[in-house]
Length: 415
Image (tube, rainbow, N blue to C red):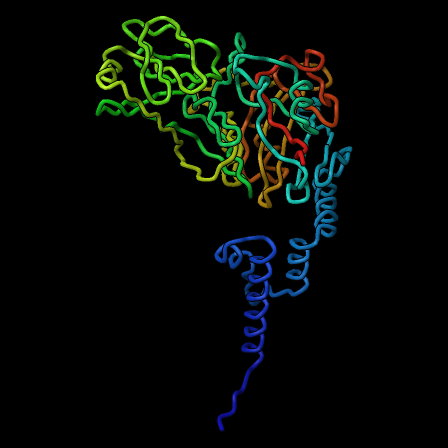
């Protein structure tokens, strides 16, 4: 009979492998991770082998009590001089003051572990359920959304309230991107951030026509735009030398250069007559819409710009996203997430003696300093306003904040 002899190195390797296999199994069963993702989490090199650390990691994943305690400790260590409030399970509101060149900046932060906050849902919210052309206070938007936390969202056209940039709610695309600006994708199990482009087209009469945008103001007369019922009751006038086509149930039923009433079961295509006229041959039309990146299974998208943090590094691409007008020291709003997929919302007060605001670079460095691996700037200035548990917690120039087009909210999930 052969005798197997194990030295200390072999024994350690065998134990290490057994622990890793166990961790992979636990994480797959308890967290629904793919085997590849679980294996990456479980990998431990021999010199760093620490069963206590591994045990803590497993307990953090499967024990809500330990996870809550670790989250509480994390937040208190991260914001040592801040005032910290419990908002809801897994949600903290942090108030702090930083100094830049001896001048104060007041900051409100909401950080949330969404695995603990299981009774809350993160989603963009419009000021109106029926039209994009609406503006309301953040308190009204929050109350209508049953929200415990709300922060002003993407840019919007002040005269009308129409969001300027990509906005998707519950997998429905309300508006398309502007200048391919950066956006946050919200998934059931995490987030992603990227500059988003629209991939949309109309097929009909043997033709394929590129759609330049959806429910956005016209930038060029050559653009082909689509307007859905969320735009309002009527589409805009067609551009010079253009036309609008009314589509109902996949059939073109009307052509006109004047505003057209938008149906519940269709949309209006508006663009150059020379481009759209071929569709009238068979009068069939099919609209297909996607984004680049494709972001399969994305539930919500809210845009902003510019980037603040990208892949754990400060990255401010203000010029590339045509946002040169928002430089300087101002009130700021931002959204980001950490390596553990904790949500981070930030509102910075400015334009007052007690809080002078931040530059984009200062905001980017702050977001990185509090652990964001990716973060983007949201609409700021007079729009910056944060709502927590029934009240506005920052100090906007207009009491309660100016009327907004949209917000990003943490809302109670209805049973």
